[in-house]
Length: 431
Ligand SMILES: *Cc1c(COP(=O)(O)O)cnc(C)c1O
Image (cartoon, rainbow, N blue to C red):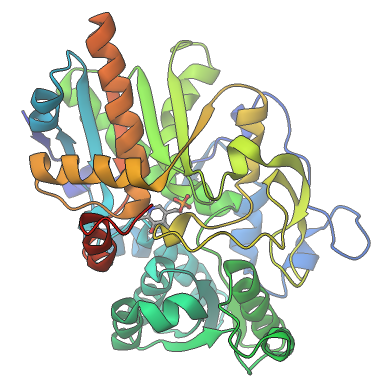
């Protein structure tokens, strides 16, 4: 059974919240000025109350609103696929499965949270949402979700991507979004970075500052973030819950769960429902691996400490693995993995040694991506290819030991907008 599909009735009815199951409480976010723990009212300038409640909720299961479930019918459930051809190519006794989130209309898992975020803002009477985007994956998801629920959207896109990745920009505009290059001249923080360097390439941290500043300055406008925060990871658990049902149909349970890590949302989304079984003692030996690029190694090289989420200092301080809020990663192709920080929940799990993290160089990641594409026929997003590389490495270890382990990884998106990166790789231009 190489492809395992579920019916639409089997889309989960609730999100799984891992917070009550964590081995210890999360350290609270701190106010960037006073350094005191922030309350719900501090966040209400940019987030609707329902999302603020989810951010701190101790409820293990949170119901998915009917309108959001209906919106998920556009593309969910996503398939679980056995990578049989890849297994054969590797000559491994391991079984490799992947959950394919590239079937979403925007090509990645990001729509799973964009839809509920737009919905809860609409419900709160908000008319307009601002956000940042790097390579454009999150911006396209947000633009489509706003279009779906009748909201205006304003996207601050990191200038280097704005100039070099025109297709995602066109996609966002097609869905009705306003898209500007960041740093822009529309905000005080954008003007400041433009003044420093008229050709500033921008960064995610700067684009976040601009989007937050915009949202704070208008009553009809809120801000939304595509990763890192607890409520974003919460929404993504729809991935892992579906995968649990599908693995059951396959008659297997994973020994190893793998996902790439930028801010932690597709990793948390796939891994948390399985980690629940580890945390409650049912599956004590389950391993979960978060994979990041060696050029932006927040989990493997970052410090576990309080840091800002943006560059200008508008966001709360979060306790997380971080490279520092003014870190500007080298311009690697996996734009979606270029964030200086990480999810506070993923950071705590790593610090408690419940999960593992590992980093790979760009060339080995592209080699893995091409091997996967040649065997399975899907050209993966460069971000997702980090997970593929780890899955292949684990499968090759099984070849050495003769163990028939079950490996599950998240194929968080397709790479159809990343053809020039593949072109560069095939021409030997990627080092
Ligand atoms: C944005 C993105 C990522 C990284 O974000 P996470 O929050 O860590 O999941 C990974 N894969 C794809 C395809 C993306 O678009």
